[in-house]
Image (tube, rainbow, N blue to C red; front, side):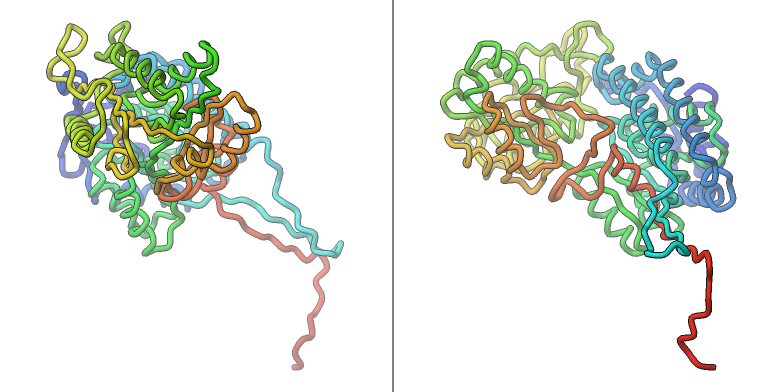
Length: 503
């Protein structure tokens, strides 16, 4: 947060400011629960001022009419600045969200990739889609225009990455915006606004209000001068956002929860290399960023004939994952983001054990160490065996380092288990049979399906889910389309009287 006082984290109309109420919030490092930053705590009044600035910048400012080539050039400059500040931003993301420093660095790389992708996408587009009107005297074309003022509400687990998936396409399309980062992990989003200003974005185009969801987020969702609201977060909050936005019939994009199956067939484990790879990827799927990932492979669905061997090795390796402060060398997994999130995780594990699950690894807070302060929000990677669909831990999104294990005997049973969820965000299938891989992937009702892999995503490919995982798409051409309206322009080159009526 260089360039302004720590509590001046609200950016409106090109100026950094405190909250109108002068309220502030301490930002805690989840590794030790100690405050390390102070931010402004905005409310509805700050939100109204920010939306007014964004509205003015859209209606009377230059950005919506800036040539696409110039908008793309600015996005590329932002990507270059992100690369320049990679270490600083990666460290800030690590301390803010609790993830390892290496995860933070990778996040910054992905953010830069997103800005570059949308820059290239808009530059490569044509001037609109020509519609054949059946006459040489008619020129008919469908063109894209920016939506207007966009409200962006982002989550705490991937603060900068999720913000970039909204901000980059919104700017590429010519919109203005107000972003509300999570109140517990706002720091890198504030830093991104600084970089946008440094890159030359006109005043009022990018606005940020730091503050809680029940005030700032709720006001953005209902504000009559907001044209689109894009929300990433939990199902309950997402439902409230959709209800508030419906009053003024805004465009809405929602990326909500996931309860993602990782289906492992026995033939994927027929060789030692295949077995080791499937186990390693199951660990990655479930425990990266302490399981605080919407696409986490938190449901292992493994063929019965290899279940015991697979789970035994999985549990052994889960018990060896090195927990600690994300900035410490050799640490593989950081803390949960808050005490509330840890208590929620503990409650899910307790309910699973009460319902008959068998604990194979973890299930408790770790002992403190030189890299793991006693005050940090740490929880051991946990493997729960012999789970079934009626358990809460299998049905509901935990957002913690908890992996449940279910078994199947047939392909049909595997598909039925994988699809037996109200969510439909992502899933994976592991098999050495190419035909089976295609069949199962085709039958899974999830927005993204990985075959013999887990977690990679491509900026060029749309991201989103089925069912209660949300509506709309991010990334790819569809992600850009979310921030656009379409207009049909019909031009008669040789107008003549119609003479339908007498007179």
